[in-house]
Length: 292
Image (cartoon, rainbow, N blue to C red; front, side, top):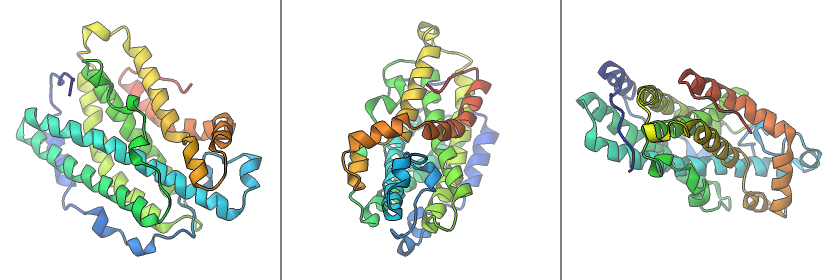
């Protein structure tokens, strides 16, 4: 991977605490009761569905709205698989240079937990019985760390923080807002993911803070533009499904439904509320982005 390591490693006490909190390890595949995964409940609260607020969405049958929520949750899970592939690759590379032992141990915990998340999301798609699309198309190429294109550690850790914190905010919304009409299995699944992800995010935030102290001189003037561009492209890809998904959910021409979702003011308001904490988090590190 083409990125420059931060000049400093997160402090050993922080790494040791994060590793300690990873014990004992709980395999999500074994913890989840897969027998309770059914298609007779919403998998996302209706407020989290891309078409929510549109009269066309309200005109659909409850079964159709429920099915769309299931496909959109599958889309989020597949984005998680695609993101965690990036995390697994980059974590494995960092092991070569990990210092001190505390960092090496934490990265091993992170590898184990990210692998568990990916296996959990893969099984969700398979066990659901839904006609899930290819997960490798869940995120476009730009979602991979931009450090593959620009040799700058700040850009790398910026994307890692964004790609971890925004899904975490969605999962927190699902767990907080899910009512009796929402699948208990899904609530349990996102809770397991959140527990591990909070540690990974703490490591990434500290690494971003350290990297911001020494940005690469050659791209300093470009960073604000790149931050804003990558943030908005990630948010758009994550929260607005591809046309194919609406078709797989049985709604017909997906291009029409996607255009509706992109023009849906209520969807934009929902997304803005979710990503606002991430924007505030980034601003604490001197990075300012705005939802376009």
